[in-house]
Image 1 (cartoon, rainbow, N blue to C red):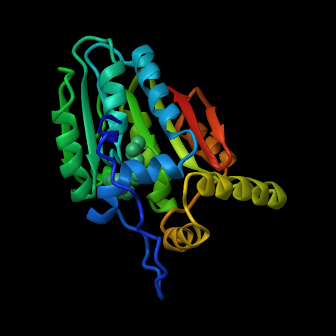
Image 2 (image 1 turned 30 degrees about the vertical axis):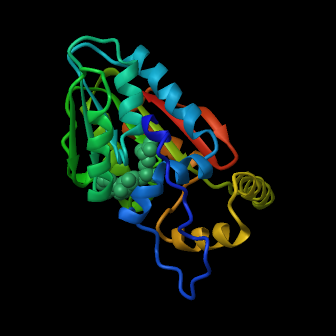
Length: 247
Ligand SMILES: C[S@@+](CC[C@H](N)C(=O)[O-])C[C@H]1O[C@@H](n2cnc3c(N)ncnc32)[C@H](O)[C@@H]1O
Protein backbone atom coordinates (compact mmCIF):
# COMPACT_ATOMS: atom_id res chain seq x y z
CA UNK A 1 0.00 0.00 0.00
CA UNK A 2 0.98 3.65 -0.27
CA UNK A 3 0.74 4.29 3.46
CA UNK A 4 3.40 1.82 4.61
CA UNK A 5 5.67 4.65 5.76
CA UNK A 6 3.43 5.58 8.68
CA UNK A 7 2.41 1.98 9.52
CA UNK A 8 1.33 1.71 13.14
CA UNK A 9 2.31 -1.59 14.80
CA UNK A 10 -0.44 -4.12 15.53
CA UNK A 11 -0.35 -4.95 19.26
CA UNK A 12 -4.11 -5.48 19.64
CA UNK A 13 -3.79 -9.01 21.05
CA UNK A 14 -0.39 -8.55 22.77
CA UNK A 15 -1.70 -8.40 26.35
CA UNK A 16 -3.74 -11.21 27.95
CA UNK A 17 -7.46 -10.51 28.25
CA UNK A 18 -9.87 -12.58 30.34
CA UNK A 19 -12.56 -12.76 27.68
CA UNK A 20 -11.57 -12.24 24.02
CA UNK A 21 -14.25 -10.23 22.15
CA UNK A 22 -15.30 -11.19 18.62
CA UNK A 23 -13.12 -9.53 15.98
CA UNK A 24 -14.52 -6.42 14.29
CA UNK A 25 -13.19 -3.85 11.83
CA UNK A 26 -13.40 -0.86 14.17
CA UNK A 27 -11.13 2.18 14.59
CA UNK A 28 -8.58 0.19 16.64
CA UNK A 29 -8.18 -2.34 13.82
CA UNK A 30 -8.31 0.30 11.04
CA UNK A 31 -5.44 2.21 12.71
CA UNK A 32 -3.07 -0.79 12.54
CA UNK A 33 -4.57 -2.57 9.52
CA UNK A 34 -1.64 -2.25 7.04
CA UNK A 35 0.74 -3.77 9.62
CA UNK A 36 -1.81 -6.40 10.72
CA UNK A 37 -2.66 -7.69 7.25
CA UNK A 38 0.89 -7.70 5.91
CA UNK A 39 2.11 -9.72 8.95
CA UNK A 40 -0.96 -12.02 8.97
CA UNK A 41 -1.68 -12.88 5.34
CA UNK A 42 1.13 -14.69 3.51
CA UNK A 43 1.52 -13.24 0.02
CA UNK A 44 -0.68 -10.19 0.67
CA UNK A 45 1.65 -7.72 -1.06
CA UNK A 46 2.22 -10.15 -3.97
CA UNK A 47 -1.55 -10.56 -4.39
CA UNK A 48 -1.99 -6.76 -4.50
CA UNK A 49 0.76 -6.37 -7.03
CA UNK A 50 -0.82 -9.10 -9.21
CA UNK A 51 -4.25 -7.43 -8.91
CA UNK A 52 -2.56 -4.44 -10.57
CA UNK A 53 -1.18 -6.62 -13.38
CA UNK A 54 -4.47 -8.48 -13.83
CA UNK A 55 -6.32 -5.13 -13.99
CA UNK A 56 -4.06 -3.98 -16.79
CA UNK A 57 -5.07 -7.08 -18.74
CA UNK A 58 -8.79 -7.35 -17.95
CA UNK A 59 -10.16 -3.83 -17.41
CA UNK A 60 -12.41 -2.99 -20.34
CA UNK A 61 -13.09 0.44 -21.86
CA UNK A 62 -16.23 2.16 -20.47
CA UNK A 63 -16.60 -0.27 -17.56
CA UNK A 64 -16.59 -0.20 -13.76
CA UNK A 65 -14.12 -2.07 -11.53
CA UNK A 66 -15.39 -2.96 -8.05
CA UNK A 67 -13.44 -3.39 -4.79
CA UNK A 68 -15.85 -5.07 -2.36
CA UNK A 69 -14.77 -4.89 1.29
CA UNK A 70 -12.08 -2.39 0.32
CA UNK A 71 -10.78 -1.66 3.87
CA UNK A 72 -8.11 1.03 3.37
CA UNK A 73 -8.25 0.78 -0.43
CA UNK A 74 -5.13 -1.31 -1.10
CA UNK A 75 -6.75 -3.26 -3.96
CA UNK A 76 -8.44 -0.08 -5.22
CA UNK A 77 -5.00 1.54 -5.51
CA UNK A 78 -3.55 -1.55 -7.18
CA UNK A 79 -6.36 -1.53 -9.77
CA UNK A 80 -6.15 2.24 -10.21
CA UNK A 81 -2.45 2.04 -11.00
CA UNK A 82 -2.83 -0.99 -13.29
CA UNK A 83 -5.84 -0.03 -15.43
CA UNK A 84 -4.93 1.07 -18.95
CA UNK A 85 -8.45 0.88 -20.44
CA UNK A 86 -10.23 4.13 -21.32
CA UNK A 87 -13.13 5.66 -19.43
CA UNK A 88 -12.97 3.25 -16.48
CA UNK A 89 -14.15 4.04 -13.00
CA UNK A 90 -13.71 2.25 -9.69
CA UNK A 91 -16.40 1.66 -7.10
CA UNK A 92 -15.07 0.80 -3.61
CA UNK A 93 -17.26 -0.14 -0.67
CA UNK A 94 -16.85 -1.26 2.94
CA UNK A 95 -19.29 -1.33 5.84
CA UNK A 96 -16.70 -0.12 8.40
CA UNK A 97 -16.83 3.69 8.71
CA UNK A 98 -13.37 3.68 10.32
CA UNK A 99 -11.94 1.90 7.27
CA UNK A 100 -13.77 4.13 4.78
CA UNK A 101 -12.54 7.36 6.42
CA UNK A 102 -8.92 6.19 6.10
CA UNK A 103 -9.56 4.79 2.60
CA UNK A 104 -10.75 8.21 1.41
CA UNK A 105 -7.57 9.78 2.78
CA UNK A 106 -5.35 7.19 1.05
CA UNK A 107 -7.10 7.59 -2.32
CA UNK A 108 -6.87 11.40 -2.08
CA UNK A 109 -3.07 11.08 -1.83
CA UNK A 110 -2.86 8.93 -4.99
CA UNK A 111 -1.95 10.74 -8.20
CA UNK A 112 -3.99 8.64 -10.68
CA UNK A 113 -6.92 10.44 -12.34
CA UNK A 114 -9.15 7.34 -12.64
CA UNK A 115 -12.38 8.26 -10.81
CA UNK A 116 -13.02 6.33 -7.58
CA UNK A 117 -16.39 6.35 -5.82
CA UNK A 118 -15.99 5.25 -2.19
CA UNK A 119 -18.93 4.47 0.04
CA UNK A 120 -19.71 3.04 3.44
CA UNK A 121 -22.27 0.26 3.03
CA UNK A 122 -23.07 -3.42 2.80
CA UNK A 123 -21.75 -5.17 -0.31
CA UNK A 124 -24.90 -7.29 -0.24
CA UNK A 125 -26.99 -4.20 -1.04
CA UNK A 126 -24.76 -2.97 -3.86
CA UNK A 127 -25.94 -3.00 -7.46
CA UNK A 128 -23.23 -4.27 -9.80
CA UNK A 129 -23.41 -3.07 -13.39
CA UNK A 130 -21.14 -3.05 -16.45
CA UNK A 131 -18.30 -4.54 -14.42
CA UNK A 132 -15.10 -5.74 -16.06
CA UNK A 133 -13.32 -6.58 -12.77
CA UNK A 134 -14.72 -7.36 -9.32
CA UNK A 135 -12.31 -7.86 -6.42
CA UNK A 136 -13.27 -9.66 -3.20
CA UNK A 137 -9.87 -9.62 -1.48
CA UNK A 138 -10.39 -11.53 1.81
CA UNK A 139 -13.96 -10.22 2.24
CA UNK A 140 -16.33 -13.10 1.37
CA UNK A 141 -15.02 -15.06 4.38
CA UNK A 142 -16.72 -12.49 6.65
CA UNK A 143 -20.14 -12.86 4.95
CA UNK A 144 -22.71 -15.34 6.29
CA UNK A 145 -22.06 -18.60 4.38
CA UNK A 146 -25.78 -18.80 3.54
CA UNK A 147 -25.52 -15.49 1.64
CA UNK A 148 -22.35 -16.28 -0.32
CA UNK A 149 -24.00 -17.89 -3.38
CA UNK A 150 -26.39 -14.94 -3.77
CA UNK A 151 -23.64 -12.32 -3.68
CA UNK A 152 -21.50 -14.27 -6.15
CA UNK A 153 -24.49 -14.59 -8.48
CA UNK A 154 -25.09 -10.82 -8.26
CA UNK A 155 -21.45 -10.27 -9.19
CA UNK A 156 -21.65 -12.72 -12.11
CA UNK A 157 -24.84 -11.10 -13.42
CA UNK A 158 -23.25 -7.62 -13.26
CA UNK A 159 -20.05 -8.64 -15.09
CA UNK A 160 -19.61 -7.91 -18.81
CA UNK A 161 -18.72 -10.85 -21.08
CA UNK A 162 -15.02 -11.59 -20.49
CA UNK A 163 -15.20 -9.86 -17.10
CA UNK A 164 -13.47 -11.39 -14.09
CA UNK A 165 -13.85 -11.92 -10.36
CA UNK A 166 -10.70 -12.05 -8.22
CA UNK A 167 -11.65 -13.91 -5.05
CA UNK A 168 -9.02 -14.17 -2.30
CA UNK A 169 -9.86 -16.20 0.79
CA UNK A 170 -8.56 -18.07 3.79
CA UNK A 171 -9.54 -21.70 3.16
CA UNK A 172 -9.52 -24.96 5.09
CA UNK A 173 -8.68 -28.51 4.04
CA UNK A 174 -10.88 -31.53 4.73
CA UNK A 175 -7.78 -33.73 5.13
CA UNK A 176 -7.04 -33.28 8.84
CA UNK A 177 -3.31 -33.98 8.69
CA UNK A 178 -2.86 -31.53 5.79
CA UNK A 179 -4.94 -28.94 7.66
CA UNK A 180 -2.76 -29.43 10.75
CA UNK A 181 0.43 -29.01 8.72
CA UNK A 182 -0.85 -25.84 6.99
CA UNK A 183 -1.93 -24.38 10.34
CA UNK A 184 1.47 -25.14 11.89
CA UNK A 185 3.33 -23.56 8.97
CA UNK A 186 1.01 -20.55 9.09
CA UNK A 187 1.53 -20.02 12.82
CA UNK A 188 5.26 -20.22 12.23
CA UNK A 189 4.90 -17.52 9.53
CA UNK A 190 3.17 -15.33 12.14
CA UNK A 191 5.89 -16.00 14.75
CA UNK A 192 8.58 -15.08 12.22
CA UNK A 193 6.64 -11.85 11.64
CA UNK A 194 6.87 -10.99 15.34
CA UNK A 195 3.57 -12.25 16.75
CA UNK A 196 3.79 -14.08 20.08
CA UNK A 197 1.97 -17.35 20.80
CA UNK A 198 -0.44 -15.34 22.99
CA UNK A 199 -1.23 -12.93 20.14
CA UNK A 200 -1.75 -15.83 17.73
CA UNK A 201 -4.05 -17.65 20.17
CA UNK A 202 -6.13 -14.60 21.14
CA UNK A 203 -6.58 -13.47 17.52
CA UNK A 204 -7.64 -17.00 16.59
CA UNK A 205 -10.28 -16.93 19.34
CA UNK A 206 -11.48 -13.47 18.22
CA UNK A 207 -11.94 -14.70 14.64
CA UNK A 208 -13.90 -17.84 15.59
CA UNK A 209 -17.42 -17.60 14.13
CA UNK A 210 -16.44 -14.27 12.49
CA UNK A 211 -14.15 -15.55 9.73
CA UNK A 212 -15.80 -18.74 8.47
CA UNK A 213 -13.66 -20.41 5.82
CA UNK A 214 -14.72 -22.74 3.02
CA UNK A 215 -12.69 -25.39 1.21
CA UNK A 216 -11.21 -24.71 -2.23
CA UNK A 217 -13.75 -27.20 -3.65
CA UNK A 218 -16.72 -25.35 -2.11
CA UNK A 219 -15.53 -22.07 -3.63
CA UNK A 220 -15.08 -23.61 -7.06
CA UNK A 221 -18.50 -25.31 -6.93
CA UNK A 222 -20.18 -22.00 -6.05
CA UNK A 223 -18.39 -20.17 -8.87
CA UNK A 224 -19.30 -22.89 -11.37
CA UNK A 225 -22.93 -22.77 -10.22
CA UNK A 226 -23.01 -19.02 -10.95
CA UNK A 227 -22.04 -19.73 -14.56
CA UNK A 228 -18.37 -18.68 -14.67
CA UNK A 229 -16.69 -20.37 -17.64
CA UNK A 230 -13.58 -20.97 -15.50
CA UNK A 231 -12.66 -20.60 -11.83
CA UNK A 232 -9.04 -21.44 -11.10
CA UNK A 233 -6.49 -20.82 -8.38
CA UNK A 234 -3.72 -18.43 -9.36
CA UNK A 235 -2.18 -18.03 -5.87
CA UNK A 236 -1.87 -20.22 -2.79
CA UNK A 237 0.28 -20.15 0.33
CA UNK A 238 -0.73 -22.39 3.24
CA UNK A 239 -4.44 -21.68 3.90
CA UNK A 240 -4.52 -18.45 1.87
CA UNK A 241 -5.46 -18.49 -1.77
CA UNK A 242 -6.85 -16.46 -4.64
CA UNK A 243 -9.08 -17.53 -7.54
CA UNK A 244 -9.64 -15.90 -10.89
CA UNK A 245 -13.12 -16.61 -12.28
CA UNK A 246 -13.87 -15.56 -15.86
CA UNK A 247 -17.37 -14.91 -17.27
C1 LIG B 1 -9.82 -8.55 5.48
S1 LIG B 1 -10.60 -7.07 5.15
C2 LIG B 1 -10.37 -6.87 3.39
C3 LIG B 1 -9.02 -6.41 2.98
C4 LIG B 1 -8.98 -5.55 1.75
N1 LIG B 1 -9.84 -6.04 0.70
C5 LIG B 1 -7.56 -5.42 1.25
O1 LIG B 1 -7.25 -5.93 0.18
O2 LIG B 1 -6.75 -4.79 1.97
C6 LIG B 1 -12.32 -7.41 5.13
C7 LIG B 1 -13.13 -6.13 4.95
O3 LIG B 1 -14.46 -6.51 4.60
C8 LIG B 1 -15.33 -5.58 5.20
N2 LIG B 1 -16.66 -6.19 5.23
C9 LIG B 1 -17.05 -7.33 5.88
N3 LIG B 1 -18.36 -7.58 5.64
C10 LIG B 1 -18.79 -6.59 4.81
C11 LIG B 1 -20.05 -6.31 4.20
N4 LIG B 1 -21.12 -7.08 4.39
N5 LIG B 1 -20.15 -5.20 3.42
C12 LIG B 1 -19.07 -4.39 3.22
N6 LIG B 1 -17.85 -4.63 3.77
C13 LIG B 1 -17.71 -5.72 4.55
C14 LIG B 1 -14.72 -5.31 6.55
O4 LIG B 1 -15.18 -4.11 7.13
C15 LIG B 1 -13.23 -5.28 6.21
O5 LIG B 1 -12.77 -3.97 6.01
